Image 1 (cartoon, rainbow, N blue to C red):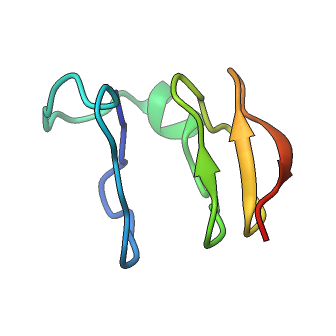
Image 2: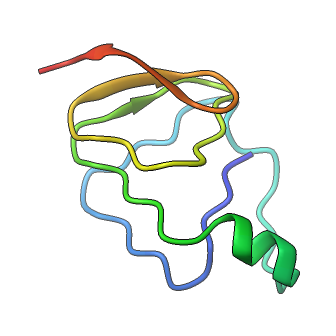
Length: 76
């Protein structure tokens, strides 16, 4: 499942592939969820592996996997 918080900006050329979307729902988030998911910056040219949970900033051109997400290498 992909969670994109309201007022998020998504750039060009975003690809979400098979098996990453289970549903699409729009609902107000509780204050606890909003506090937990604030101000995360994901750089350009990144790859996030399946099942990853992004809880911190990701630098550009990185390959990341895990829960919580960890950087496993550079793709530049």
